[in-house]
Image 1 (cartoon, rainbow, N blue to C red):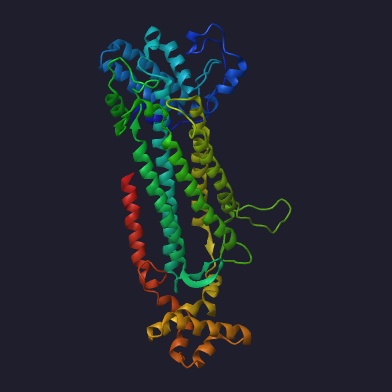
Image 2 (image 1 turned 45 degrees about the vertical axis):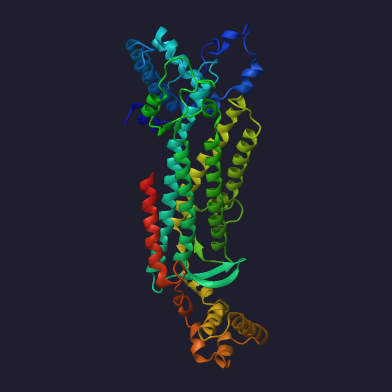
Length: 483
């Protein structure tokens, strides 16, 4: 593990202490100092300082490349790399001191390196612009953090899978009513329901893997927009940083934020999937459903109502999804009108990105804890699953097996349902008395029989539950191997 990789594990909030005044690094062309209102409005240090390790990693690669191609002397390279390592240590120890002229993390690090290395430090920016520097640091940050999100998604999948196994291990396996339009539809295994959410999350993990592959391109060497007349070696820098490839077009390299938008979309869709899970758990833990209860460590109470036990994690999983969607919309709206190449508007990519990543990581961790510690009320779930009306489709399919066209069978069973509601008689009695049905069809109403008959691959019955479980495990391993 490199110094920067080890230090990034210690990344935390850093001091904003200001100690001295000086000129901005870009100020050579100007006669007067920047207005305070300009500085206050354009600064990004307050939020991009979390890129410190990534900026240092990019600078390490850049300086090493400059030495390799002969633009810097080996002695200058040693001085600058040593200063970069010291700056990394200062950040890790929360001892780095910012100055009023530090607009962003990139200028802050360059200023400090120049202080430490002396005259050689002034050469660190040779052949580089903040445009390609910022894009490089942001891509490095995304590579690391999106892997964390992806791991969190896969961890939640495994929690759902574990709870599904536990539900199937009960005798009989836990079943519950499946819903369409939030109305009772057909009985399903609890394991089947939990794994439905797992499959959606696996698609999210797959999308994040695609996004990682597309963003794994180094923009370093593109300069401000047109490359450089110096004999730079962008491939060397890319290899040093662990990028899979190098930019093909310098204009595109410094202006491309597709990877930010793609990540924000992926997180927004993860949020949608977490919101659906949250909505169900709000319902399931209500007195009206009573399907599950939360562990005290993952529930909250009321400041006024002593009896309350609230599913706040599930509710926030719903609520924060609007935030994820808003962050995506913000970046897309910012990007839509930008001419090539770099524009300062692109500074607005970071806060939405950082916020979405932070919030989804917290959501995934909280939901893992909530679901893994919750208790399922098997008797309540099974009671709902065994309601007579949920067998209606199975009775119609029984008639289809006997040769009746489905539309006719649907009408026969629909009439029985209508009569049961009108007379208050159990459906099973009406089925037993019907000339096209009788005792054999009435056996479908025995506990669990209808569910056991479901044999379609990927369906909700116990006969195919093991097959689905194995397919899920194979897919989990495939996605883990990809990361």
